[in-house]
Image 1: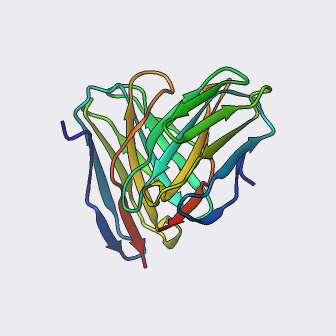
Image 2: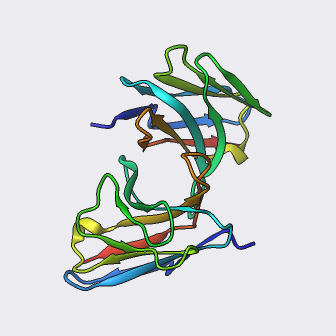
Length: 110
Length: 112
């Protein structure tokens, strides 16, 4: 079983729709990162959240860290085909152990 | 700056063969990492290094060895490849601490 669960595993939507993907753990994170990975490339960091309840925005992407620091969400407003990719969360635990989730594979159709 | 580069991009091995994957970074990062990525499993840490001459085991180290003889290079070795090692391998580097990791483009390895 994954230490860090991401849902949904796959998501296919039309351009212009909104979506939310989730990252959950039974353990408390000291911080959490979101990466995006495009086919044939390595992951690229989007954001790091550190404080419980923290919200960060990156253009049409909104990242939220749960109050208890056990979960996080990524919301995309008015999705575009360029948002297509694999979205990975990576949780950093208090012992400096870092674990990645399996990812949400997003397809945005024009 | 090239960032993080990996050699080779693709490789096919037969069971029992050996090979070395090379990772190079030009960002003067202290930390370097080797991950494998498998469908439905996410990225799993194989080995990592916190500085030249140091290495440590990650989550899935069995069947792999690493060396960090120079700060900019991190080598991953498979002494006797097995089909279970078919995967995409990513190298990453970062400054000290678990902050932003910069990833290479990956090596797709198939073991038949």
